Length: 495
Image (cartoon, rainbow, N blue to C red):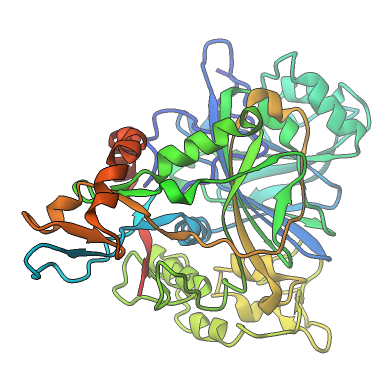
């Protein structure tokens, strides 16, 4: 078997806590040998965009022979590759996932009752083989974390396809024109493989740092190896709320949100799936979360009126910002030993200075070549927790108080992967991921024989909407099974 995975944007998942490792669950362009069957069904990534740089994070889950793992990314010239942390993805995903709370309820009847109940929140949501080709230049070769890496360049259509084939990448004929198109558009390519002796369990997230503002993702490569649809989750960090161009903005009808008091689950997942499928034949993106300043400042919502707090694995102390949760998760994961950085993060909530890099282009923040930043800038090293530096890298060129964190989701049909994904400013409106259900099913379990009254309305509201809501709750059993299997190590909850 020559190749198990060839990717430009691979599935970002928290370690092995969410998905079983029985197959390759996602990649960008995925080319399996004839004896293998590989279907891409999901992608998750983070993109930070500032005037001085753009950074793409990608975490790859892979099952198979480690010696056969290979990943390739089309990049603009000048890009460098580094390693990221598991805590980065774990924190962003958990903090921005949709959370549904139950309707407030009291019990009618004789005047006694349950008082007020707010239900719990539910989350729905290459060396060795050659590297030789006269028409392909190896710009850089080295190691990053557990990976062997090579940065490649060519201006000859067909040359990179030949190089990939020679080095064990089984490129399908239908995908060769896509690769040639990126060559003609002056893209370079970063390729990496696991070092000999490394196990797939040692795979860490990678991040690619590119000079200048670039809010375009090479989506065309995703089509290789996908099934009929591919799920995409993209986190954007920028001084504007961003949205994809050329796609419909899907929305979940909040008035149909329902809570099942018997199972303690909502119908959000079923409503979300239907909304994405119905919008322009699936060519749509949903924005379940968009907040300005939420990386460093506490947030609140009508469903969590006293503020949202975050609890990470390995800690019983909740924190009230995403940045602090990131630091705490890094400690829990053993990815840092710096216990003071969360305190420094708290000082940045209203900081109007830009974050500057003290290092030469492509160098990590711990590199000895790093010096200082310009007058009036924040040294990015102040945002690093020792080697846990994803937040620091994401903020270079940005002003902390002005930064938006946005979550975008899609379930794109294969036909929608015919062009790259271009992001541009969207309406600068906040989108809250904490939602309260409007209707209920099995509300009678709250008070026994008493008649439940939800959100101040009469009980007939619950009974009258039961049939309508029940139809959308039919998918909850499957969603619950998936949710239980993928129990998160990191959780957000209302204070």
